[in-house]
Structures are given as structure tokens and as C-alpha cells.
Amino acid sequence: MGLDVARIRGDFPILCRQVHGNRIVFLDSAASAQKPVSVLDAMDRFQRSSYANVHRGVYTIAEEATAAFEAARAAVARFVGAGASSEIVFTRNATEAVNLVAYTWGRANLAPGDAVVLTEMEHHANVVPWLMLAEERGVELRWIPLTPDFRLDLTHADDLLRGAKLLTVSAMSNVLGTINEIGPLARAAHAAGALVLVDACQYVPHSATDVAEWGADFAAFSAHKMLGPSGIGALWARAELLETMPPFLGGGEMIRDVTKAGFATNDVPWKFEAGTPAITEAIGWHAAIDYLEAIGMADVRAHEVELTGYALDALSDRFGERLTIYGPCDTAVRGGTVSFLFDGIHAHDVSQVLDEDGVCVRAGHHCAKPLMRVLGVPATSRASFYVYNDEADVDALVVALEKAEKFFAL
Amino acid sequence: MAEYEDLYREIILDHYRAPRNRGELPVPPAHKIEGFNPLCGDEVVLYLMVTDGVVTDVKIAGQGCSISQASTSMMSAAVKGKPVAEARKLIRAFKALMSIHESKLDGVGDGSDLAAELENVRFGDLEALQGVVKFPVRIKCATLAWNTLAQGLDEAAAD
Ligand SMILES: Cc1ncc(COP(=O)(O)O)c(C=O)c1O
Image (cartoon, rainbow over all chains, first blue to last red; front, side):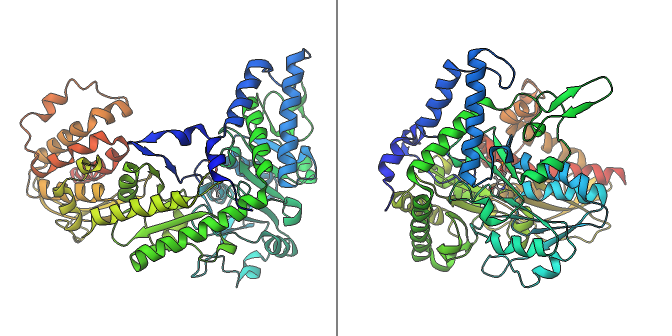
């Protein structure tokens, strides 16, 4: 069943606007997705009718706010296949979720010489926290390299994992679109005695996610990439891990008791949620999950597979060798994020010309500079698809790219 | 006319396609300075030879968008053979040209001394980069070479 993209697009007010007199063609959902009216309305309605701080007051709207906030947590838990709501820690975003693991679990469990295995395709959010630990306490970082077709080269994975304490890997690359099969990786890591953190930031928005089936230990993701608001994300972690991990930030909400001499921490997950959380954003995230579930994640994935195939064909048919695509060509192992580069034309210059046609693509290093160095390019252009994109958007991209190529032709 | 044609004047594209002074200089005696734009990954490598207060030679390398690379090329042509004092003056003037936005972003200057900086400066080809001001996110591309040059002149002066 194909998606009714015309109907879906109607749910997104921003997609009705024009840019430079042209229909907006939004192809940058990998950076942040647009919001349907149901999300905007849910947040607005909540702020108008039930807003109060959570877990504090006993008055009616405080109870309503707390119930709505915790219902959002339950929705997130269900959406990713967590065993219980208490396994979901709300954070500001995926970046904070990874940092939470590095800061609390990492500092409690990693000693000088301990190894963390990561991959060459990680986002800075899943690189820099580990580099910080490497600098701070001499943790060794080992990098899983790439194959020529932009997938993980697991030839020496067992050697890399031997004796490691953690494997941290993205479920889908935000540059290459590559989807990494987490199940086998998690089994290999566990066999070597390592825990597994999944950067699920690009995966959760686009595919049915089941962290239990992955067999992972931690997963990090953000609401804003899945039609929800910015300002909220989550760390999923197995309950036993959360129980034993030291707290993250200190403050209100995360304590059970405080005296002049010390403090006792709250139950999980609140132990990791110091201070007033992103309350309205949690409500918005819940609405985004409802929206995606109404479409059905299997259909979301099927739509993106089809559209990505169409885009890959259109780009190579039209531009051939002059345009390099950085990512697998097999749509079965990749998502709808397509990075590309014209021979001799910089990604920023391409984006500038595309903007004139209302075509929004990202240009740059996509917060993955180690990967860019592996690819040997300073930047790429990146078009990424979501439920509101269709073939007409790809066609608009191709037409705009033709203009860019002509303009910058040597 | 498309708006971007104001940004990409012909002379800019010419410097981009055929950059002047591309190459390297032996270090030392030359100074090698690398400038990065962390936002977009543009990279400017500058080899600077300063002798007796004069920029006797400049070579450039690096990679990036047409604006950053054209600006680098134009900069190299503009300061080669010039006294350091004049090169510094040109840096100030160029940054003033770009600063309608940048000085605001950086929170320095109120623009009143802009006119003074721009007076009596012969921009030549550099004038073509003025269109960049209309595209605020690209200003950093244009100023990268000049910030790198400023750093290089400081290093040379410290010798
Ligand atoms: C793969 C991946 N990991 C992590 C992040 C960080 O997400 P956020 O900026 O929401 O923390 C991103 C977002 O760009 C991403 O694409």
C-alpha cells in the first residue's frame, strides 16, 4: 500500500508555503523533520488547558500534566519496543542521551586502556563523547571501517571487539543512509563481553524499531527527526543498567531525599531527569508517534524504499558519472538519505542554486567529519525523504540540479 | 535573473575555476597557516612569505565552495608584493565590506567606522564579493581567507 502523500502533505502547514515564489520542496528531514498540525495542536491545546510542572503539584492541572507527560513516556517506550516505560529517560536530544551514557555508565565502568568500539560512519554525537573519555581517562577507541560500498566492514569485527567494554554504532547513517544490522552486531559484542549502544536517531523515525529484538543495551534518539518538536529526545536502556548507573545531572526531580550531608536518588527513570523537563515537547512527541503509528511504520519504510529507489535511478540516469552518490545502491540496506557530489562543484554552491527553486537540501559535513575524511571529500549535498515527499519532489530536485550543473559548468 | 547570480559574479567563478597563486612555499622560511570553517568544512591553506615588512610571496591551497576559494585567490593576488601594513589595511577594509552582518553577529562595532575603513581602498576584483553580504550564511566563506591571512601576518610578525 503506497502512502497518500498528497493527503499527508496537507497535514503539514509549512509545506504549503513558498520560497522564492516556488513550492517548497523539503528534502532535509534527516536534519530535522517538519511537524504535522496534530503535533502543533496537541502542544497548543496542552499549554492552553493542562500546563503545569510535572511530579510536583497535587492540584488538578498538575495531575493532568503529569499524566500526559508519563503517557508520552509510555508511548515512546511502546514505539521502540522497550520492556517498560521506566526504561525511557527523557533527554534534550539524542546527543544528550549518548553523553548521558558516556558520562554515567562510562565514568563508572571504563578505566584507562579499556576499549570502546565505534564505526567510521558515526555522527559527532556518537564520536565526541567517546573522544572526551579517551582524552580524560585514556580509553582506547577502535574504529570499524567501511567497505567500498559504504557498509560496515566486519571482516575484523571480532578482533576489534575482543576485550572491548562497549560497541557504539548507528542503526542508520545520517550521511550514507546505510542501515546497519544491529542484531548480529549486538550478539558479537555481547559474546566479547561488550555492551551495545545504538545511535537510533535516524532509524527510529523511518522503520519499526524493536530494541528488544536488537538485543542492545542502550539506544539514543530525538523527537525532532520523527515529526515531533525539538528540545526532547530519549535514552532507552535496559532496566538493570539504569538501576546501577550513577546519576547524571544533579537537581530537583532526580532525588528521593536531600540533607546537608548528601542525597539519595529517585527511582529510574527520574533519577536521570534533573530539573523541569521538556513537558510540552513530550506531549508533542506523543502526538507525533500517534501520527506515525496511524500511517504504520512498515508503510513508512516501504514508501521510503520506493522513493529512494526512484531517486537513485533518477540521479544516475540524468547525471551518470558526473555525480557521485555516497551510499549503498541497494535500497534494502539503506534509508532515504542520499548524499551526493557533482564532480568539481562544491555542495554549498549546489545548495545555493537549489534554494532558488525552493529545494531544501543539506550541504556540509553533516556532523560526521571522520566519515568525510574517509570519503575524501570536505562536504556533500544530502537529500533526505520522509512521509511527505514523493516523486514530484525528486523530479524538482533533478531539475534544480540540472540548473546548478549548467551554472557552474567549467 | 536568479538571486544567486548576484552572489556568483563572473569574476568570482573565474577565480574559482582558475585560482591564482596556487601552490606551496618551503616552510620555513615561509609560514603555513590553515583556516577552517567548521560549519561547512571549507579549508584554506596559506603559505606566506614576509620579508622586511613586505608580503613577498603568497601561495594558496585547500578546498571549499566557490566563494571561499575565489575569495582566497583574490586575496592572494591583492596582497602579494604589498607592505604588511597595507595588507592589514585591506583585511580591515574587506571585513568592513562584509561586516554589515558580521559585526552584528560578532557583537562588535556599530558600523560608524565602516565608512572610514572603506575610504581610499581599491578593492578591484574583490568588489565582486560584495554580493555575498546578501547571503548571510555565506559571509564566513568569504572572510575565511582573510582571517587566515590575519593570523599569518601575526605569526610572521612574531618571528
Ligand atoms: C545519526 C545521528 N546521530 C545523532 C544525531 C544527533 O541528534 P540531535 O542533534 O537531535 O541530538 C543526529 C542528528 O543530526 C544523527 O543524524
